Image (cartoon, rainbow, N blue to C red):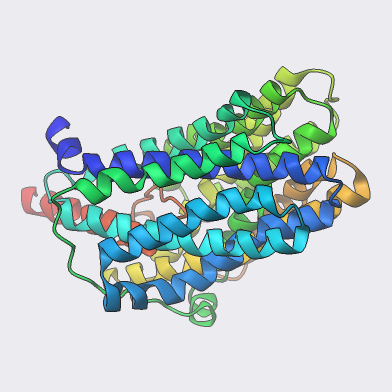
Length: 418
């Protein structure tokens, strides 16, 4: 384990700074937008803009990497993202913020693609699984730490924006000083969304729902906390709970989906998530602890939906198609992210703060209903033909390639032992 970590320590440290900066910046923007009097719909548009940049970068960044090189593009994108963090505090205007947030999403998807390309290059058959596990833990932990840094300054001032900028800048240091050679550039194949809909309508629907719901749940958490009068410290814990909650049930749900009809598990997860969200609207806002438990529970059932969408879609694909399909589903997830925060922000504007929880209640309920419908249109995949569930981050298609390669290596090893 330690040898595996040592081989990619620079990337892991760089990613941890980057994710902490992202967590801090997203939470800070929500509070600052609320305090500045931006409407719920406008705040949602600002948060959705991140995913617009994410989707755009998904198509453009690989060309930049091919033409310019990994290290140069990584350095350029991190520098731009760092500068953007500060610019939010200089131009407190919703239209400007939408533009800046779009650029942020573009930079982050580029950094993810490059970082995960390095992970792919540095991993071997022996340590690939360990590296993937550590990478997921580092990403989740650092993202959750980011909101907690709200307590070191005043959201109405410049210092927290500067702190977010510093964190993003620090992500450059370990990568710039590393002796890693640039990985061989590989174009990512991608199945179009239309093709994926023909293959697995439920997989695409789950990917879209995951992006819309998770995007709103995390990026609007600080707005919700501010609207119901939480203290700054409580808001930071509330946002962290929405992130950490998403990691709690990934393995148990994945384990169950490998042993039963995956559509049934997806249906149950969606309806339980919707029920938790409905319940959260009735528990009252007086107890911060109950609010944190509520958002963690909703997050726990929302987060696995993306990985379930990939696993379910892969059940209908050949191994060669799986990486291309995961890239297409990531794009669907990004499109969902472009829609979710805007609609959820509008719901908060119309219904009050409770719209924050009514939105995931509606999306998860709709997904569960669609899953039930799809079960009447197609027979279940035999359990012995189902692939294995793999917990996936919503970052870049490169990670899916690493994870699927690791799983195929395990399958080959298992077959050789029989």
